[in-house]
Amino acid sequence: MTKIVILTGAGVSAESGLGTFRDKDGIWAQVSLEDVATPEGFARDPARVHAFYNARRIGAAAAKPNAAHRALARLQRDWPGEVVIVTQNVDALHEAGGAAQVIHMHGRLDSALCAACGHRWAAPPELSIATPCPACGALAARPDVVWFGEMPYHLDEIFSQLAAATLFVAIGTSGQVYPAAGFVAEAAAGGAHTVELNLEPSAVVSAFAETRLGPASVIVPQWVDEMLAR
Ligand code: APR
Image 1 (cartoon, rainbow, N blue to C red):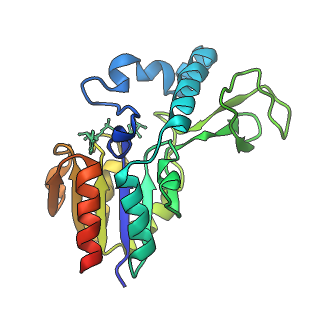
Image 2 (image 1 turned 60 degrees about the vertical axis):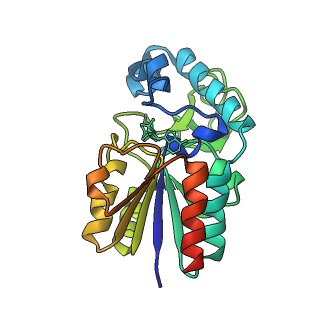
Image 3 (image 1 turned 30 degrees about the vertical axis):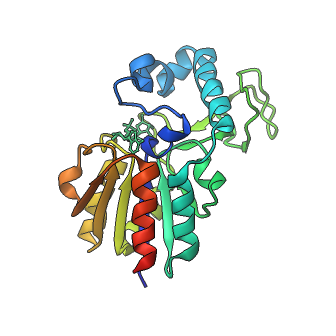
């Protein structure tokens, strides 16, 4: 039976009002990633990093899933095989749109991590270095988000899913950050058909067998309708 592995990036949440990173008015055009998305930046100024993620956490909690999130949940529900969603996004809009089995390889805003003992808990809207760890009491709370220079989560599971995929689809990602940008090559090496659904060609568009361009809220439901009509 066909196993579909889907990789999503910031573009799938763009029409829900959440910023992308590398578009011209993207997040990395407004704030330096070295300051807010690296362990060194957190060590230098934890209050600044918490403020950056607190604002994104509050924004993401207020955002609503769009037609792309809902279409992917419908595919998971109605496809006669397995549909695994791997997301680089730290929002919970796939889940809000009805998806199950979502693998968050860059962590998630609604989770807090204790840098002292590794305990994870549901993040309050605002985290700070004064937030005690519920398990060990240390004042070492950090966003449960993977920073540049850190190892993404669940890679073993992701690579085994890619090896077993018969179809790999990347949606709303610029293909500029590894290891996610290399997933298409992994899937193709395992014999999968590969499709890119994006607003504009990604940096790895040439690695895909098929590419469709347009806003996710339009082209993802169209693609899901075609898949389910097969
Ligand atoms: N519909 C579909 N695609 C869109 C839309 C849209 N409405 N709007 C933007 N896009 C596309 C852009 O063309 C771009 O290719 O989404 C992609 C967004 O790319 P990035 O901003 O680089 O985001 P992403 O690929 O998810 O970044 C990967 O980099 O900064 C790190 O950890 C961060 O997870 C992030 C990772």
